[in-house]
Image 1: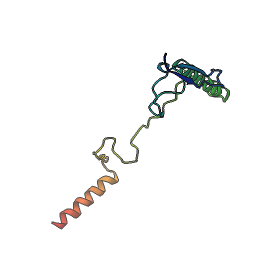
Image 2 (image 1 turned 120 degrees about the vertical axis):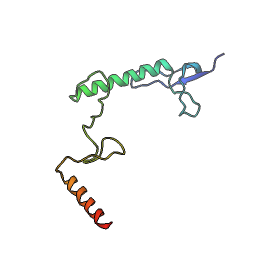
Image 3 (image 1 turned 90 degrees about the vertical axis):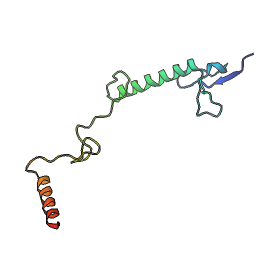
Image 4 (image 1 turned 135 degrees about the vertical axis):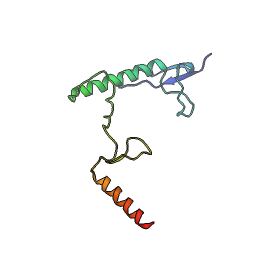
Length: 115
């Protein structure tokens, strides 16, 4: 006889708790015994119900239901900090006539006078 395990179900989504074969439970490494708390068919039913509930809640709050996917984070247009290079290890070259050129010329002048 196959070992049976209790599927906890979900009262909120109308999934009844029941006994099921251990082979019906997905692996869940974070659990003590390494198995999930719901059988695979009920886990799929539960996650589907959670997704539908989230979409319904979002629609009530005035958001667009979309296709159920999370909105991706906005992509930055430029470097993270002003003056920082877009590539690692490379400094940005200042434009001609900018303050950066004046500082570079002043630095060269002081180094040349020390020699």
